[in-house]
Image 1: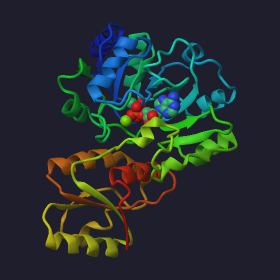
Image 2: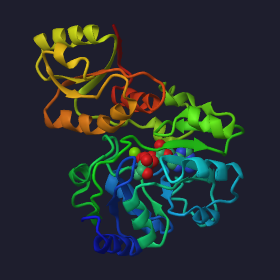
Image 3: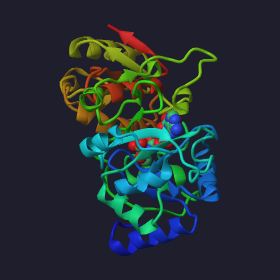
Image 4: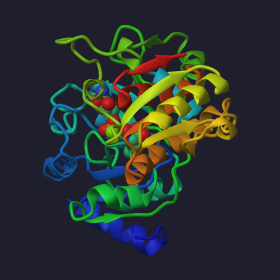
Length: 335
Ligand code: TXA
Ligand code: MG
């Protein structure tokens, strides 16, 4: 569907009646349903093949909507909202009885986010209810940043997709919890730890953000424990200069077929194998916006091995590395 007023109204009707709609947000496309209807939400899990214990984010379009959804609104939420909402920040709070347990994956907390994409906001308003929406990919696949990615994964499984163009941020929202003793970052995203610390005064970073969970370790955010962002190709993160990166990848591609690189603009002239651009080395926003579409494109191209030139871990780079390390199953090559 297009994002004109008539189609947005139709999308709102479908959602109101318990259907599933793919919606654009500034981060990635979401697979939305009425968050207050357990039956509608169950269909999200079926369409994605998502494990039942992985809770969903509830999307609102006005701050006042939060009051009914949570047990209590800590004052700092208003500071966070003023600084970052609407935008790519998700806040976990104690849930109210209105939130069905299928939404919270059986937990007594709920994740709330107010997206900034104008089409997302219009769709929430048209539906007249808060919308539960995970990323609109088949579980385990890279998140969709374009409407055609959603069609690729969800065609025949959902009622409609509203096309809102390419997602600006390109990685999912930053997730923090205010239900621990100190505020804690569970998933890095477009809002950086430094920006959050400025408002919160302190911020712990969950250890699962950059490392693998030990066996039997409980994940603070259930989504952290599942295989994620995985294309068919084997992905490797490669640390080193442009020259080292190119020499290494060239040497592998001389011996093997199906070798591709996700490379900085600075690397391109030195590479002999096929590559996709990751933007300039220092442009963390470009890395974020290109990552998921690139991972999908490597599959289309039939890549067997993909070598990704490692960005830095700071700023939005932390979010990019968090996704990359999962898609690479923590394979890092240090040159
Ligand atoms: O940018 C985004 O956040 C996108 C768009 C569509 O808004 N949504 C998204 O949803 O990424 P999803 O379901 O793919 O990721 C939600 C993450 C999961 O890792 C989940 O485990 C975590 O948030 N989460 C949700 N509710 C939680 C809760 N109550 N406690 C801990 N983690 C929670
Ligand atoms: Mg997801």
